[in-house]
Length: 213
Image (cartoon, rainbow, N blue to C red; front, side, top):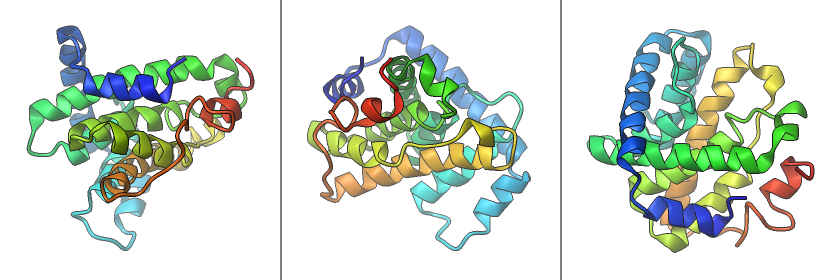
């Protein structure tokens, strides 16, 4: 089971060359998917909401939604969207963030167990959200303490229903997971704090969503 401290360690540890190569391919797939999905109903709806186009959390939401609408999307869209939003201008940093986020998302998904998805939760927006906040924290250069708080801020918003997957809400909730992750990192960087053990704690994410797996 990946604990909060495990996540912090993962973000602060350089990924392997194999992981970086895979992440570079996934990030390229993400950017292609964004271009293909920009005109989708869900992506247009998000872009038309009031707000500032330069806001990285909004960018992650918009681009994550667009990518999730397209065929050929990467495995963890929210991770790619969060890394791209905060890693703009630093391609190598964005790839590193994706590599780390993918590793975290996979480990959180494993910790949540099979019943999590069978119960109707969408792994892309639960485990994917935690992977996304790891990626965003990496891209933003967070140190251990604010990173822990960012995980807590994001974990309390990790949600999403598999019932929405075949509707316009499916891509929207994937994009929102990315936006929430970026927002969590920005809040923690500004001094906002959260629970100490948001993943493994008695009232944390696993206790709520894993049903004992």
